[in-house]
Length: 391
Image (cartoon, rainbow, N blue to C red):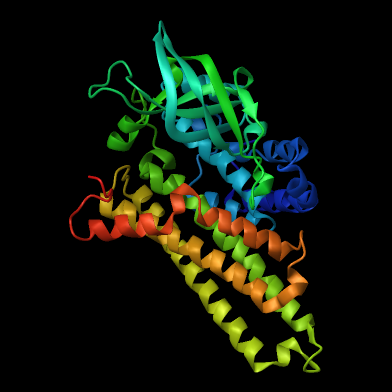
């Protein structure tokens, strides 16, 4: 069928968003979107968006990736989160040993990950036996594979144990159904448990190596976007895309609902109030600001891609972390401000604005978006210090 265009992928994203709209109430109640929506996403081949072309993927860049996520987030943040990770997690698969890449890609299944390196490993012939329990496995009920974090001493690499993703088949793991949260309920981010699960070396990804070199295990460098852009800045672009897309939907709905709202106490339409007009204008300008910063983020990724820059300075990496945190914080604050502006009418459980506010708060407090941490790290690098406060 060939590689779809940017416009075709955006059209597919819009279709997924519309299908997600039909399931939002059930997803909120059940703590996850259905396998039916999973099949819609698979049919749209969203998991192939970043996959290298040599493995049957589309090899597309950060703009299409970001826009797909943003468009779905205009319908529902949880659905966008799932599609974001469905595509994103094929990024790190491309850095596995060639045999591991081939195995995962040939299965054509979805892939998840949990980066926290809390697993325990036993070294055996041909690989490791992995044990432990991890939480926050976003979309794990949709996935055939999951990379689980652990410190592993990988043969052929000096320096002792390093953080790794140990990629196991979900059929060999226990799913711990513990996802019952304030927001992002539709992501179904359940826990997983491994009990001496065997994983061969070709499915163990040494993250320290990838972070330090920007190269896949065993070489086989390919001239595709995921190998030309620093790993983590590309990995995280979807968080801010979700924040921007969901906020765009909030502002569209807010403007309409202000226009429809009757202020009984004052006997006027809400939109006729100078206070409402002023407050709406302030919100729109704030939206302009996070849209502009998101655009600058994507342009930076595209600039690195054009220049073939798989590694960047710590200051540059932390600068994008700070941008992302600012976008997510602004989006969350705007969502709750919109609730405040509309009052009790928007506070009922299941109102689109009420769902969006809870979802954006969860995006804000994700470990990768923690505002104080990322601002501290960025500020430290401005004075020549490590971005990590303990180094």
